[in-house]
Image (cartoon, rainbow, N blue to C red; front, side, top):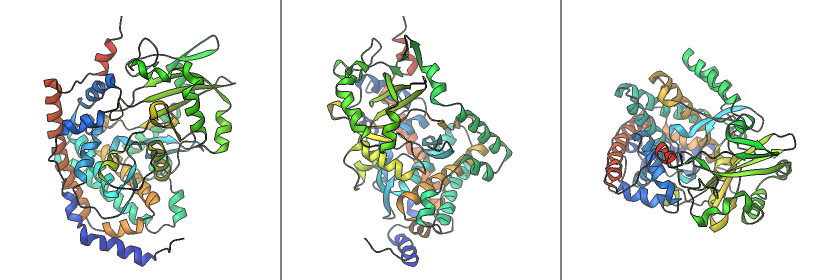
Length: 470
């Protein structure tokens, strides 16, 4: 076993990192001398071709939705910036919409990071910068003034700093068991409006269960449940509404006894034995293809509907895992299997992870991970927030990100020592957030011109849905 450094040695290591990575240098946005359209096209390779226009359509809605779908651009740019030298598995896509509420296996509602498609070893600052820039871009999209946006960004970064300082005093086990519950959020809410929003979110989460989803997504006939097509977002791979090519219809329910059955058996082996026993109490009723998110559009994503002997449902999501954009621009020691990379990173960063989290290799060598489709999951309705509420949300995100980093890295002491108690890092990241928002706008404008010129094809959900109307 490796020797454990003393707290003094760890604190000195964090302060020493300032020598090669001055905190003021974090204001720089990096290498933006690149073609955003070309990078996005590279990132679209290997996706379902007929869905790539939908990906671009969702990205074209606003500079904010563009930012959500273009993580590859910021990863490219960050690779040319200074970093503290403290690297570990980071979220890789920690923008403000990739935080949310969900239920732990013990049915406790918690707030945490909830998207790990890009998780990989990288500098912790990259997560903080993606979060900070997302608040600046969202604030500008919502029409807030520059002063309010600056306060929102600084709040997220200050909360990250303050929480990390507290976590530096925690033992390894205390960090492992630290959890941000909605009850704790209520206790720390700064305004009555914030407490009201948290309570409403808790009520909403309570109704977002597998049972509530069954009647909305599927119909029962002759004792069998069938997921209802709603193209382009939901369809059966081998059915009349399919957007997959002929060679991709292996994901039909009818193919279950063949290639998919072997992939599912492989997935089961990545679960603890008691979870395998739990799934054994369910029978598969149907499988459909589901288009999710913004950046993930075009990757393979299946929904599997299982029913137990009481007629109760379990929805599992089977999502393709591709190379992380972080791994493309930062050398790290991550699992070779992309599904395992996502699962390992999620288990490490989250306070409590999905009971059904696992991975497998599917047909054509595609790598996947499994999780529940919905289990009291809720996300922020950011565009309805006032600047005051968005600032409160920024504080919660900063807290959750600090908790995740402290647990995953075991480096809370070093990071806290690097950050210090002053405003230098927060000031630098506020400058960074505004500068990157400007860069994002430039990239968005270039992207929109490419869509209008026909270099890229962008189609909305409504446009594509119209193709299926009689």
